[in-house]
Image 1 (cartoon, rainbow, N blue to C red):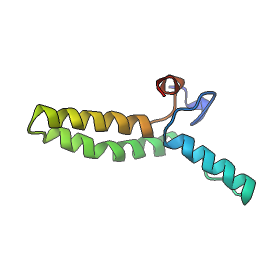
Image 2: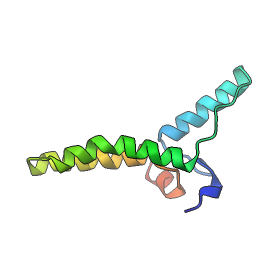
Image 3: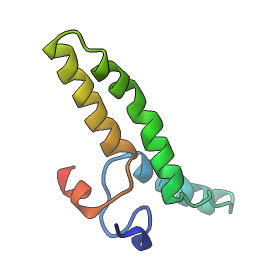
Length: 92
């Protein structure tokens, strides 16, 4: 996986990391303070934390409709919190 490209590179996906980078740029301009860099390990832990409600819901789903809702929640969580790749930007 291309971790050397950084969390956000040439293309921006509409996810939480785009907001993080925007807030970082505003803080640098206004206050002169930069936010810390996000490591791949932290990103993976945040992703697992964000996926856990959907995984628990899917495991305990009593009906197909509830299971589909859990899968959609998990997909959106993965999109919003996973490490950025340019294919994700194409989807937005």
